[in-house]
Amino acid sequence: MATPDFILHLRSRIGTDLLWLPGVTAVVLRPAPDGAGGREVLLVRRADNGAWTPVTGIVDPGEEPAVAGARECLEEADVVATAEALVRVHALPPMTYANGDRSQYLDLTFRFRYVSGEPFPADGENTEAAWFDLTALPEMSDDMRARVQAATEPGDACRFVT
Image (cartoon, rainbow, N blue to C red; front, side, top):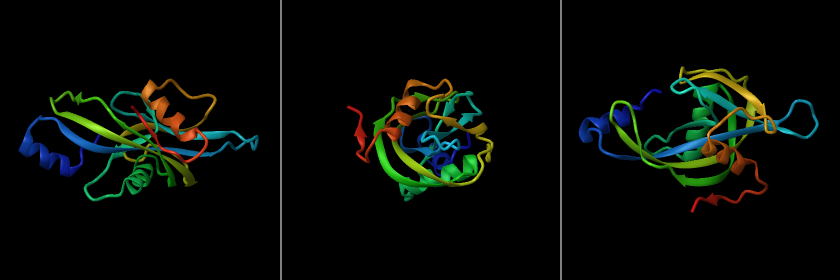
């Protein structure tokens, strides 16, 4: 995964110390093409670990989180999508990368509505990008499945993980 320049700049000053970062998850939904009333979700297969996930990314300094989600959809999967609702807020556990850098993310999960584009791994961060019927999701971590679940629940209320 490409590390944003602002993080490289911070790392030059703080080394591998824990860095608290805002992250965004864009759960992009569209009606299933069969017209039977089902829905599909856009998922990408990460190049670093092979995991299927919704589109995720880091919010740049001063960037609105919903704008970051839309930007990540376009950059990672060449899909245009519009944010509809913030559906989940969750502090992830601290993580340590192979180079020793430590980070912790505040994930803001949004439900996005598909607008246009045929998904493909546009920026090299992913090896695949595809639509999946919500009843036939590939294997995913419990956390990623919870993000998709939050975006597919009725209503626009945000769920706060406690």
